[in-house]
Image 1: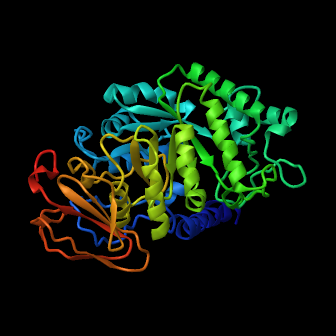
Image 2: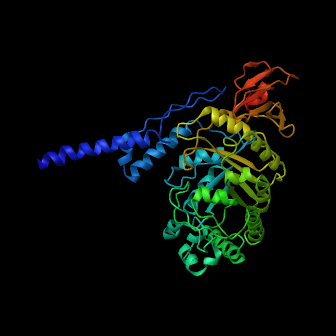
Image 3: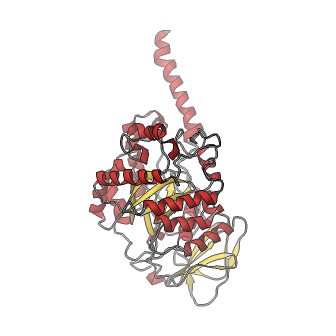
Length: 473
């Protein structure tokens, strides 16, 4: 009986548990291998996403990393072997920061030649010379979290200001609690469980505290010195601009240091104004989408004060009026100030053609060859590069002005094509521009205007077929 229990029943229970985990959590999660059907006209053919073995849930770290590298290789089959950066309109961020596994040099090389920026944590600094080996012009961003994560401090991860050296988050909480945001009772606000962020227990600094500003600059400069240079900007992640956003994402008590969002935002403007005098690199503040939509003026003010801005919700989560307001705010930002868009159109690894093209074409409403504007998108996690679409390599030519709103559609004209975006969540709208022609869709098929754009869709109206691709269409 003991042998039966040991060799039959226990293995059977393990298999049943694995299947339960697979069907309940994995197969219906971002690991899902299915891809939604597409209605968009596209010149991209995505390969079928490979199957995911149910045994992966019991694999060790080495096996899981091997599997992930296989997924990376699969996605890199869609990447060009020659970059289109010399003529394409869009600039690209590398979403593959490889934070949780070690990529091969071949994988880094394929990513490097096609991207304008890479984002790396301090623990991946050894990858920086490999990126530069294959793309000497690539810009590098250093990842720093805006909060003070207890786990980072334990690991000395050098991923936030409280994890750089022995004056860590624990030291700050003990010796300088006045540097932290407090609740109404005077206690430091702490990230709770069940929020959208996984850093439960994290503290949040008070941006208006002058001593904190000085400490921040000192520690960041120390880290930059230890890393040996080679960085072009610093990305500040988990950055919240309103009380509503802070409590919603972090599940904290509301901070009481500031009575209004405006006062809190002014403190951040002061923070970056002061810190940038002491730190030699610009910042890219990853501002939450709630704050972007509630206070779009802060979006443009912050971009200028920090040196750059990133948003992770443009355009897939914005109602049409917010979409319009954001485009108006972007016009206020000088072209040499960084604007980073990290869209999230694909909740899983397998990709979503319609949502990805909608997000990319929306980005083209303000992207320009002479503008520091960059785009990327997530297919579940940032660690793994996304698929590459042939539409990214199109030669649209120079822009012929800013985007305009025509019949509830956003339209921007380039030398070789027009980008037309319907950001309406509910209604279809017609694009009726008839001047000029003939027109074609992205695949080169004749296009007769007017055309109808369904809700949350976008299209490229091609004018010059022969010039659209760097090699000709």
